[in-house]
Structure formats: structure tokens, C-alpha cells
Length: 592
Image (cartoon, rainbow, N blue to C red; front, top):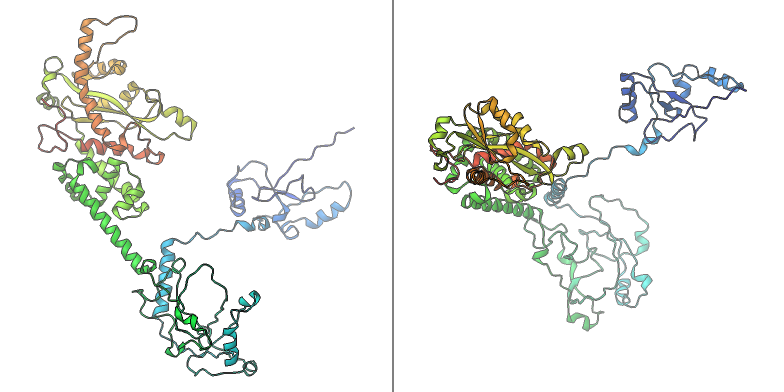
């Protein structure tokens, strides 16, 4: 017996189409043409990502007009009527899917309107309503007879609850004198009025619960007035009706003829008190006032923070008060406003969030982010000029006394500093940036300073797993090192000796120690001497750590990792101190 061939499983690649040969065996599945250009057009019209140009994919008949889009439809219909006769439907050349009933709910929705736009739109509506000239209010009225009115008022208290919620619509003519008209006469004529002037008032009668009111002898007569007394609830009304400064006139004009005494049918006890709606100024709200108050608040906040920066620049910017003139120099030499420079330096110094800086300087959070991204590269470019490698003669001229006896040829003291970053989501990045020393994911920098504390080299950032030897070899430090000099370092740099020998330089480091062997007396003394001199690079690093973005556990956001190189360059420039120059930003690092 011949084995029957197992049918191929096919499915439709159109997003949200669930047709397969399993749940829809009677449907025709067309082979998607191969080729990058053709499949790109198909994927674009299907609203899906690009697929491989060579894989075998299918699209079901629901996305075509089979009768018109195929070239052998009649042959297919005839052949399928005969048993054991199989034929394949072929699409016409250039036909692509064009029916997507399964994707009706994927239409793009317009983004929600911003609060500022809605606020301005609300303000424009109110201004248009206030600027519109008073129109002649001529509306025909349907009034109750005088007797029915009084009986309605008198019997209102004894009405059943089903009648207390009765609604009626009344329209009143303000220009014509109020007169009694029978309902029979009114129902005979139909009056069309201007839609912009006609007012339909739906009055709900209900009982108040737990509300103390004062009844007044002077109220609005419900027999002739279509409006209730203009009052507002402070919990729901956003507009101040009587005391709003922005509104020039009332939206509803009150006719003095509508003010009348209450009918004598009311009991005298009802006249002892009145309902007087209180207009609380605290609940009043105006868009103009709110906008002015917000602008005034932002101006005051900015003035206060600028005044605080001028008073305490060391605490807020990392710049000593006597060196505050550097802000003016940067503003004059860079196309940046002074405020933008202050925002950038304050972010580096205190590592505050953009939302806090936006509140302090009166900007939006997105504007602060753009300012920081714009200013940082320009400031780094200018501050990089302060990271210089002096000549050997200049270094020896300013060599501290402690170095002159035994280590007069030292031109550089090196060390590495690490800054914690957020844990990357990629497992490979996690492994590469893991620091065994800090027990977290870090960025690693090689820093060098002269014996008198001047930063003369800073490397780019490396992952925390990089070794000290690899960084020294790769960062370009050896290219800056003069020949026939000495470099002082910690024990961890013992593997760079062969690299320094190529530059005809020597490595000065504390002697190695071993657990099983006691150190010699001379080795202990040498370790103490070198440690006492190596402390200068630690002091430089501590000054850099005063900038909170460079703290050991700053946990830098992953989006800020690319700019940390520029941040550390700016920080190195701000701790600039050269004894023989007249331009010094920081105080003395080493006392001679």
C-alpha cells in the first residue's frame, strides 16, 4: 500500500488572522512570493514586521478577492468538482493582500490632548462667551395660570414622592410683559426660536437632607422666572459668579422685574430666615489668575535658587566662592546662557532629578533634559583644556618636599576609581560590568595626577571587569608618559612593570606581601613611605567624589552612562589647581 502523504500545516501570516489548515481546512492558502522587495511590500500592507525573504509563508483567501485576483479561478472550480483532480490557484502578477477584516480594531487612536492645550481651549471658550454682545432674548413662554401656580406652591410640601421629581420645560419671553395664558391656547401654535437663545431648564424637586438654610423674604418668584437663584457649590463650581475679576459681565442678565416678594400664601414662619448663598473667595478660580500665579511662582523660585547659588556656590555647584567668576568666563566663551550652565553644574554636583531642577528653575522636565544634554558636551570640551600634562621641568619645580629626597623623578601617581551603575538587563553586559572589588556593576576610570595634585590624565570609562593592566595598556596613558621617569602606583599595578620598561620608565609601588612570610623591616618602612606619598591621588579622587554623580554608589541610570565620560572631565576641570599659574579654581590640595 502506498503511504498517504501527510498534509502540510499552513497558517496565515497576517497579524490577528487565526486561519490555519487545522481550523479552516476548506480555505485556500496562497504562497507568499519570495524576494526581499516583494515581501517588504506585503509586510507593509499587512502591518507586520519584515520576514525572511526565503522562508515558505502563506496568506489565506480572506485577504483577497479570489474570483478577481486569481488567473485560473474557473479551472480551479471545474477541477474541484471532479474527484481526485487537484489544481493550485495562482494569483495574478502584482496582486497583494487588500482585505483585512481581522484588523479593524487596530486603527490608530489620536494621542490624548495635553493639559495645557485643554486649559487654553477652556479659557478661549470663556473669553468668547464673555466677549459676545448681549443678544435680545425673545423666547415664547408656556406659563401656568395664576391659580395653578399658587396651589402648586402651597401643595408642594404635601406632594407624594413621585411628584417631587416631576420635570417640566419652560421657555420665557423676557421682552414681553408677563401675562397669564391658558395651556390650551399655547398648545395650538408652534413657535421656532433661535437655537443659540433658547434655554431649556430642567428643574428637579427634591428634599435637602441635613442642610441648614435661611429663608429670605426677597427671593425669585417661580411663577415668572425661568431661572433659579444663581448660586454655586464650592465643591463643584470652578467659576466665581459674582466676584471673579476676569468676568466683565454676568452670563445671565437678571431682570429687576423678576425680583418680587413671596406670595402671602406662605406661612409667616417661613419669612423669619432666608437662604443666602455664600460666595467664598477661597473657592474662586480663574484661568488668568492661575496662569499669572504660576508664572509668578516660577519667577520667584528661579530668583531664590539663583540667589542661593551666588551665596553658596561650593555647596550647590562645586565651585568655591572666590572662583565663581569661572561661570562668567564659561558663559562668555560658550554659546550658552548662564542659567543653562548653572543647571548643568548643579545636576553634576548634587545629582538631582530633572523634575526637581525643573521646579527650582521654572522649566519643564523635558526642557531641563534638553538643556543638560546640550550643555554637557560644550562644557566638557572647554574643561578638557584644564587637564594638561606639564613638562618634567615644571613638575620638578613644584615637587613637594616629601618627594625630593627619594622620589624626585616621579611625574605621575595613578589609581583607578569605580562608579556604580544600574544593573543592565542584558546578561552579557551584567557579566562584563561586574566588579569583584565593589561587588556591583560599575564603570572604571584610570586617573593620574602630578605629585603636587594636578590632574594630568583621565581615561575613558571601562567596564568594571576590566583589569588595571588592561586599562593602562589601552587608554593611552603610556603615550603621554615622558621617558626616563617614574610612576607611583598601588600593589595592584605590579603587572605594568614591563609596559613601563618599554618607555624607559620605572614603577614605584609598595613591596609585595605574603601570608606565609613576614615582611622585612625595610619593606615595611618603604611601604609606609610610599603609602604616605600615594595619598595625594586618594585626595584627588575624594575631591571628585564630592560631585554626587561620581559617588562610589551613585547607581547611574543606564540612559546617562554614555555621558559619564564628559561628567568626569568637567569634574576634573573644576578641581583644577596649578601652583605656578595665576588661574586656580580649588584650594590647595597639598600643604608644602
